[in-house]
Image (tube, rainbow, N blue to C red; front, side, top):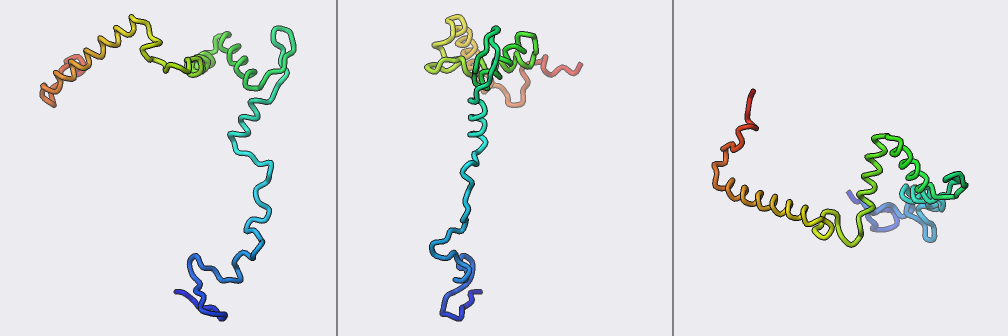
Length: 149
């Protein structure tokens, strides 16, 4: 399906456009390019959350970031008893209040009593896993879970 041009043996086809339709030397295929002020969503969100706002805190005017103002408003709604705000605030607290050095649930952050409970539970699971492998594959061990009424 290759064609020959009148100027020689140049083939025209996929990935080989005619010479007269190619970009001319020194000219871009996108002359205007991307606008300099255009940002992606992550940049817009970061800039919006960092923008300062005027707020009265305990009767005194303060300029704080939008992010901090939103968190203060979330705290106020949670203190008034809004269930969604309470859940969201606890979720944020659990995510960002854990120390950087240790992951949540690691043995270093748990009391000895909790560690003992988890160790006993782990031992129970391991022993039941060993006894389940000896049982018949189709056997049901718990009669309460299979009650029809």
